[in-house]
Length: 479
Ligand code: GLU
Figure 1 (cartoon, helix red, strand yellow):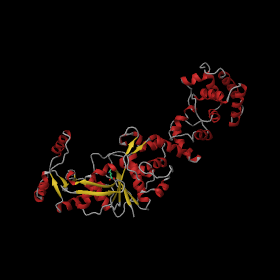
Figure 2 (spheres, rainbow, N blue to C red):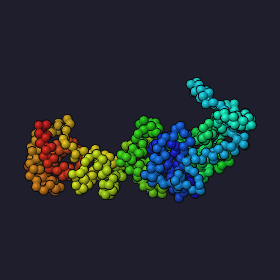
Figure 3 (cartoon, helix red, strand yellow):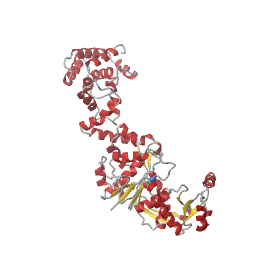
Figure 4 (cartoon, rainbow, N blue to C red):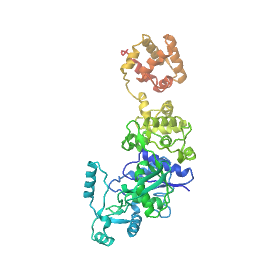
């Protein structure tokens, strides 16, 4: 049975790249009816941020990426938060010390960093030749007991090669001579990510380690640990980089990839998941829309692509619009109404009016909070016309009579309903000897302030007679 894990650190809020990793790990497990594990990697104490852990649970829940094992869903007394597993890492470090494959290092960080920086400035590779490697274990233990600060490092081979086969990137070989003795336990007693992730993946019986390909270069370090600890190697699935369109940089730095922000703005989890799946997975058919269940059915590791993929907010918006337009009316109303209520006072509006307003935009809405923006014309006190609109109103001498006739028709209409409005518009067209376009456009401009929009009759119906009359009157003198 396949078992995968998502192992976020707490150094930053979950972004699109993290979600893509979580989704792929989830799909790889679930397409085989396997298990998906959540592990919180919080060993980098200085970089862990408050609130991130809670957000991870909320996001996985919102996207229905339900984990089978993890925090709050422990099995066999296993802890899934690394800071609660310190004894485990320590015991494995001790095993390696005993076997002579690891050693205590007392070098101070400052000198080390200064050397590293100097080499960087001189554009030379820095490979630390650790003098502590040859300190005898007894002497080292005495120094530890005397309270000296230390790290524990693994002895890396100086010759030979380390190879593995990645299920996406194929066969990869590294020269051991490029590796420095890696730190396993830091001076604060916490394990490094390299050490902890190997131990955890092995003890949690992860069969397919799935993560971003930025970790590929560290693979020899993990592999040498699997070897030293006598752990069987899992399969490795490295995922292509996600770049933000045009900027060409890792998306970590951008707000557009802030998942909470996207959800708060009214992007649907189903649309985000669908688009995320296509960032690095190619179904090799023309199908573009997939539910989570369809993804589970269709997903296949062999269709994961190698080339960096491009996160394009415009494409996500396109998916989102599609998913919104496919909602049933009630779902759509429940989804959009809070965004309207948040901005406008709806106390004197009827339920029917509110629902009609929301539904007017159903096929056109890109994200939930956009409803407040597009429906602004129904709540504004005054309409301001831009130059383009004014120029249009001045472009034909028929327009004043269209507007005057329209105003009269509205004033005389005793039953304000859709059918009467449509008939009224037709009459204006006939009476003024105008065309449909030359009738509709000036009316639209003076009552909405825009030269585009949704169906005019429905818009007029929602605006109501008094508002329309006032707006037509206010426009007199502009053309
Ligand atoms: N904690 C690592 C991160 O958040 C996870 C890498 C991995 O999945 O092994 O990037």
